Image (cartoon, rainbow, N blue to C red; front, top):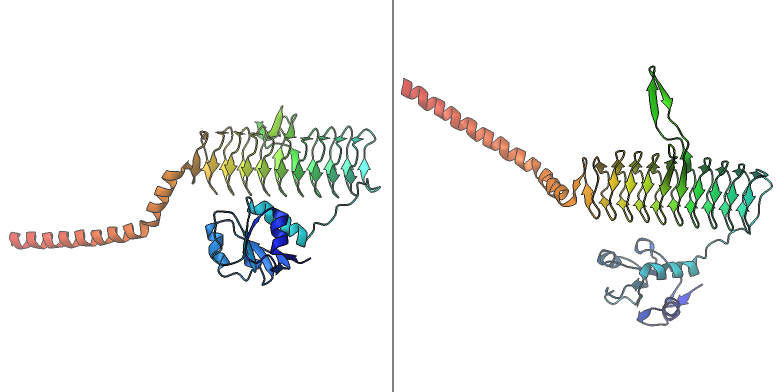
Amino acid sequence: MSLTLGEIARMVDGQLAGNPEISVDGAAIIRDAKTNDLTFADSSNALKQLAESSARAVLLPFDLDAQGLPCIRVKNVQQAFTQIIRHFDPPIPGEPPTISDGARISPTAKIGQHVHIDAGVTIGSDVVVGDHCTIHPGVHIMAGSVLADHVTIFSNTVLYEKTRVGKHAIIHSNVSIGVYGFGYETINGEHHLSAQLGNVVIGDKVEIGAGTTIDRGTYGSTTIGEGTKIDNQVMIAHNCHIGRHNCICSQVGIAGSCVTGDYVVMAGQVGLRDHLHIGTGARLGAQSGHMADIEPGETRMGTPAMPGKEFWKAFSTWKKMPGFVRTFKELQRRVGALEDKQADDNNRKAA
């Protein structure tokens, strides 16, 4: 499995600076690299860490210098390193497409070609499964749902009725899609569940992380736009319309009827109140709470959220608060001393 740097350079169409006969036995990130490993650095910060690494050689972009360490420069470091890792640690081959006898599939379901369905899967009435889909153990797909081609669903995920999933979507374990929205009417002192007549529509090339929940629409659809990537443990409520190519990080909570534009980024633990519109290209900082619409391209941070520049100014001021408090107490002491002196002077004059 060993490769010379010359062989690796040819593999990734890279430019070698160093001895082409140097041999490496593996590839690893800087933190884990051993004496005979190739590593990579894709930023100036990573380059600083490289000085303490045991790696024999490094993969770099063209604008970085390894300072004497043999290196291979490439246009795209991540893609090239992935290719090298796949050589040293090839992926486990997938099982050939089979439909397990342990799966329960409704006779009215339509299953495409080259589909792999594991034991413990339940597929309800009038479900459509496209070609080249992979459905892992314990998945439940309820009546009227539709999977397009090349969909992968991992174990113990549930798709409620009429869920629609686009091509090349990936849905990880323990995801719940199409669950009832959190909407109630209070009648005679009791909370009654509102209409749950809609569904969820997932676009092409969407990826949904483990433990995520997406509620169905009340009357229409909750939609997730093409190419959007959703991290683990995200909550998206009923009637939301998430745009294309959004990146939604772990533990984000989006209340009902929110709409996002394309290429929106929400960092970890962002919270949105209901009925907000988040403009295209907006970036929402970690743990920020949002109570108002956000214009396209804006960066918002903090709770309640404010423009990014204002947040950092406020944060900078907040960091100085201990000093402000000390100064204030010292001024209080001085004022008190002056008042005492003035009182003494007044008393002497009166005497």
